[in-house]
Amino acid sequence: MSTHVAKGAEPIGQLSPQPWLSAPETQRVVAALSADGAEVRFVGGCVRDAVLHRPIKDIDIATHDQPDKVMALLARAGIHVIPTGIAHGTVTAVIGKAHFEITTLREDVETYGRHALVAFTDDWAADAARRDFTMNAMFADAQGRVYDPFDGLADLGRGHVRFVGDPQRRIEEDVLRLLRYFRFYAHYGRPPMNAQALWACRRMAPELVRLSGERVAGELVKLLLAPDPASVLIIMHADRILAPILPEAEEFGRLRVLCWLETRAMVRDDVAPDSMRRLGALLRTDAEGAAAVGERLKLSNAQTTRVVAIAAPKVAVTSEMDSRAVRRALRMVGADTFRDLVLVAWATARATTERADSAETARWMALLDAAAAWVPVELPVRGADCLDLGVPRGPRIGAALAAVEAWWEANDYRPGRDECLEKLRQAITT
Image (cartoon, rainbow, N blue to C red; front, side):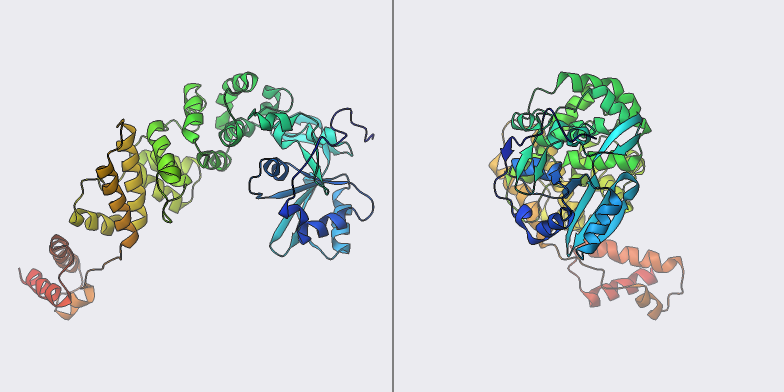
């Protein structure tokens, strides 16, 4: 196999100094992998985000050595290695808390749906040709020199999310790439969208139903955490790309304002971008429908419960709530859910109002302050007190406690234990 590459064989640029690149753990892995002369390059997200001066989340490395040799080199250097995807040429090197995913260069021999028959290669351009977008097909060597066989650097600079090769063919290889296109556009793109890519996404949208809920959710969650996901989701909705996976998505204006509230309208330690809050705000459905979304996307029980609570709230939150109503709502749903409901209700109100009113803004902020300051309160009497007062086990205990709780709540949770015990005695005797 030839290592000559007509395009991308020579570096076209240089990364600025990168702490992750010069870190001792990274240098140790590179030294181990190149000990017998193999060329080692970083690839994908770490290169893309380094170019943009964004935080680096994962460090992926490519090499032409095959997995058994990679594992032997790492073991020889005393580096712990895990065969995470050895059938696909991938292992993971672990040094302390640092993880490095190392994959042998591959090229497609035959593709069919999600699956492909691949062969290991030493051709960097052939490996890059397997990747989804040009901005993800850039490499960087240990010195930070950037190799770019598909003009990903130029695309990245102008916010152009472009498939490597023919968009429809790449989506046919893996339909998830359709959702990845919109997710990457939300985080890295600028208008206009690539016409060929958008045409292919429209044409292939009906195939999204073949994807598992987990894979769809993984992309949606990441898309929702973009600075302005509503703009991208509106395009997906208009082109009937959302319909196969999330037909309940309709509240785009509310989502847009919620994102603004979370990121630019205020600075609070208790408010930050949140994918489940954004998902709940996006939906127009009832509790049953929101629960169905959670089941379809294979969300955890806690995530589904939260989405349902936001999309179909049990309490009506408004900026006009008095302090007693606020405390009752906080006790009913808890501080975290109340905070979600305040932000979504605020976004709903703001989405239909042309100009913000400073007094109303102050009222919404006061509701957030109430959530932050809330200390849960518990009814001072319990079932054991009923037993002590001679009430036999059974429904009478629940009825008596419910009566006391309603009275205690009506008195704004102020009565103490002695007063509640007296009210319990009255409830038992009536």
